[in-house]
Image (cartoon, rainbow, N blue to C red):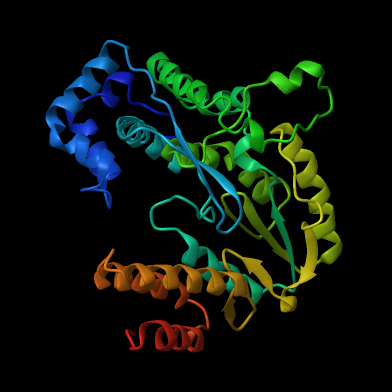
Length: 356
């Protein structure tokens, strides 16, 4: 598969691509406000978007921002539904070339990967290696530097129209995460470094995809230059396994230096080398070589959410089907850990019947 984007700007705004993009953007959201409004005059909206793109009149709309606190405080920025369709259309064109260059063990926001595949692989490596270096990046999405990102993307994109559209989307997110970013100065910076455009709105499909692109060369650095035999990444969390504790500490130093080239930093207090037998807190679970547990706060948070849903059902605000759908989704996730007792207790006390 080629690692250069061979499609052109015109391929983004073909009607077939825009319709496929609409189907992806609307998945799981049909009948809700923005998606329903767009679908009501679907053909007209797609043709208008197609015309605006072809005439280069397209401009992104304003984001709607809101804060979530699970698993930690995050500012989420939702683009208008029309823009979300465009994001899917753009990614349809870009993803094949970039996907071909990604390492196998990058697990976030990729078809056939995901949380459970990442957990399974990490646990397999825990059975093969004695130590793990666990790292996560500080303020990752707010820190992503637009100039560096454009350089990375444009190495594989030659079409000027696509480059212009990417920069247009990037500019629409400038300032969205300013309050979430604490300025970090790197070697060689002057006072104007604080004015560098940075940040990808959390919630955009393009942000998720570009985050993988941004760290792709770093992923290859870990495997090819450091020679780590067992490395995986999920967004801004990554694990390096090995049997030589001193070497892992050396790799930590090299990682810090390499990340500075991307204007990124680690949570230094968390980036430690530990025996795998101590357990790894990762993606909502605590992993051990022979079993895995759900993080306690994950169980508490869902207990509260289910209590709220049940209260809404008793007040006839939502149907039992809504409660059941939420519960079954949660069960499908936590069943990948040793959670039988938790599930049984939760359903006995909150639902009053067994749904497993």
